[in-house]
Length: 148
Image 1 (cartoon, rainbow, N blue to C red):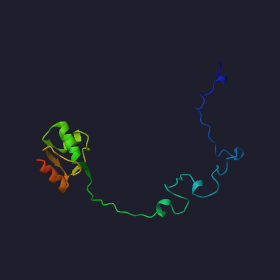
Image 2 (image 1 turned 180 degrees about the vertical axis):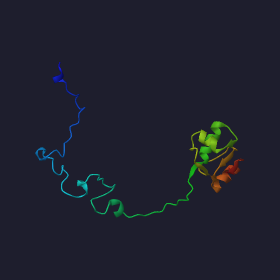
Image 3 (image 1 turned 120 degrees about the vertical axis):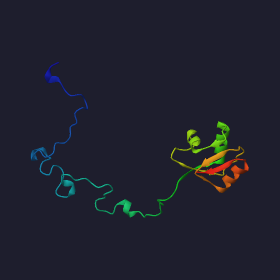
Image 4 (image 1 turned 60 degrees about the vertical axis):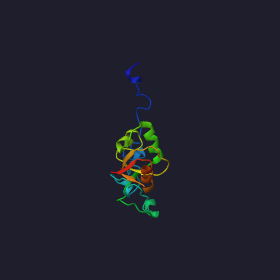
């Protein structure tokens, strides 16, 4: 082994094309960029969605619908889930903190109780919203629906 036999590890040296090194290199003059136009200039970067001057796809497609910026999103929780939770933890008051603690909702969610399923346990439920039928079912079972 001597200094003349040393070579870099395989794949460690990236051999790219050397442009702008004279006419004899085959990539001199315009440096393989062609003549004139935006792509031949330094500092050129294509805009996202640019299609060479053709009307871009996102402008050709029709727009429809409406997003209400004042919409209030609730996490729906049904009475059958409340029944299961009440049987599991055996408490008389169910608050959003208890619901979050047992993984039925995220911390920042607004919770609305809906009427799917049956409830037979008398519990006091604190939530951000109730459907009329759900509140009626809770009170019929001897519980209380408290809106926050």
